[in-house]
Length: 214
Image 1 (cartoon, rainbow, N blue to C red):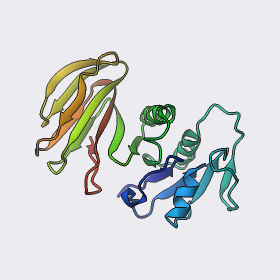
Image 2 (image 1 turned 120 degrees about the horizontal axis):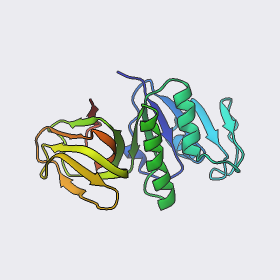
Image 3 (image 1 turned 90 degrees about the vertical axis):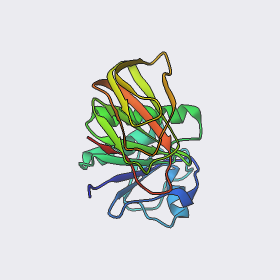
Image 4 (image 1 turned 120 degrees about the vertical axis):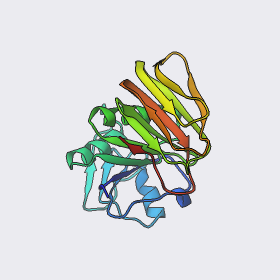
């Protein structure tokens, strides 16, 4: 199984809904340190300016940044993971709090996609990823709502198969929400884009399964 970098942000979430694959490299991004303490998990690395946490943890592996910076704490954590060679990222505590922070974390998924990596942003009810010129495959166990949004000016050669509403070689733009509120129907499904980026979000499943890229 591919190694994963798991990042915890400051947004509060249901700790019973957190699953960390064995062997993951765990990073606390500022206030995410509190969530990990609640889970009794010691991070491999803690980064941030610590304005959310309110103090600098007395730990060995802490990277402190000035609050006057361009990067969000999540991006700082992502860069630490990328520098260590990780290509798959799970981000918890980055959805459902302040809307501007959620949007920043969606952009962070795009940043990962541009770097040739794959990120999953977990909320209590939904999971989101960004797909660049590729395909996601969902097995038939998935259920509930799935939505697809264009990121950037336009996404070309968009294909959606095995859902309630399907398209073939379509074009999507960021100015019209064509892909909102689709549904799994108990079949294997696939979402692909030939050129551009898609944000794909779906209801969290009872299992820990995620779609497969490729």
